[in-house]
Amino acid sequence: MLEVEALEAGYGSIKVLHKISLRVERGQSVCLIGANGAGKSTLLRSLAGLLRPSAGRILIEGKEIANASASARLDYGITLVPEGRRVFAPMTVRENLEMGAYRRLWPRRDRGVAADMDMVFDLFPRLRERQSQTAGLLSGGEQQMLAIGRALMSKPRLMLLDEPSMGLAPKVVQEIFATIRRLNAEGMSILLAEQNANMALKSAAWGYVIAEGEIVRTAESASLASDPSVRAAYLGL
Amino acid sequence: MQTGSAALQLLVAGIGTGSIYALIALGFNVVFKSTGAMNFAQGEWVVMGGMISALLFASFSNIGIACVAAVLIVMMVGILSERLVIWPLRRPNTLLITLVSIGLAIFTRSLVMMILGKKPVGYPAFSQTATLTVGGITIQTQTLWIIGLTLAFLVIMHFFFERSIIGKALRAAAADRDAAAIVGVKVETTVMLSFAIAAFAGALAGAIITPLTLSSYDQGAMFGFKGFSAAMLGGVGSLPGAVIGGLALGLLEAFGSFYISSDFKDAIAFAVLLLILFVRPSGFLGRADVVKV
Image 1: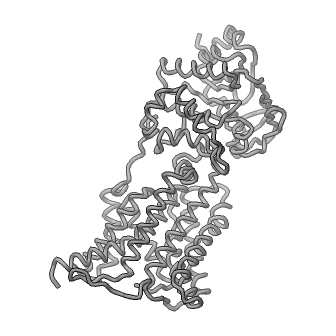
Image 2: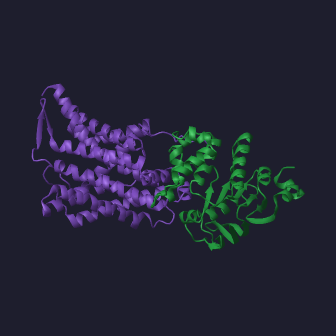
Image 3: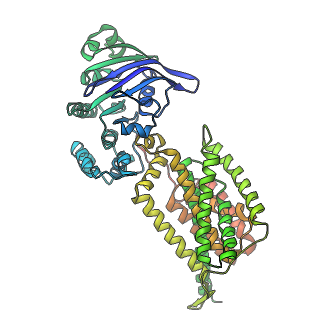
């Protein structure tokens, strides 16, 4: 599904990512764990097209997309649920979901959008109840649901999630991760960046550990979770 | 004149002037929402709308065609201005865009002066009958045109922003540029569109006010200033705020210049601006963003 080869990116003259390589197989759930500032968000932003990489390759199903714009990447089936949720606060829940399908509504109108919105409402019944409410007034957990729902509206095949647990109560985090697992079980490829390594390793099949902009370990999640050095550094055990 | 009918006449005149200010303020607010910056070229587009309408009227003698064509031409100027001056900025920020817009205003004014001349120009009112007398008060028919066309424009804008997918994309980009880019909105294009709307609104104001006031190349700064004050009064970035601020300023000017002195007409806008900045910098409808994190 996704192959990243020797990717380098940064902001201005500051290089954040150094020769990052990783893979997500079709239908696989992969997590990226690392401390704050390790480069997780920078990597996901480069994959979503918000940041131009300075070197390296990004392949989606074999096609090179490193130079494609953010909107073109949606057409390749890749979408990002950004850090901090970033819902359109002054717009209603419904309008937020509609914006998620923007590429399917403009310039050509895809008739399937209404059915997909129904599907999102089935996945998150609370969003259906609040569809006319302003997104900025939702609780943190509801905003996270909305951000995931908005991403689903583009009909992605690979979903990038950046810190979906951030700032949420443990019970809500459980709920969000259950949804992510469910999406994966239905065939969605997932790349999940998390500081909450415990949750991330439990829900993903494969894991990468990123530190100071480099991939320092990669293995099956279960073996990462039982690795003493990973446990000490990221699981607080 | 009786006090009652004088007040009514002032009310109509005030709403007329206020409509003009509302259109200009709307231009300020649309660009502010998409860039976070004040565009000081806004007033020049008002002048351009009036002066190009006059030029076209002189050649076609049809006011309707002249005004519609002028407004569309100025809209193209707005788009061109954004593409030539704002779009190339490598790292656009609020202050930079504001400064660049001041340069754009000066450039536009000089261009208007060189191409369209220094002499004030005008054309007749849209209706043959210049005034109507209703219930003891005399109203200029052009004032009714101004109010009607402004209202029609505002209704169209409302539906554009609330119903159309492009209007929603503009709101989304204004709310969160990155998130808008994530869902596939081309954010630079939304900035261009906001300049197009702002130029259209400004030119419309110029085209409909010129029969009452004439138009001359050097009025841009004052139009811009009045519109800016109206935008501040109503709440920067709020579209209903532009309307409320514009009408409030128009009415204050009308009543103030009648009951105090017409010498103070322009000073009222300055006084309002200062007062607003001291007392309530967010304006009537401006408020801290409602965001839960």
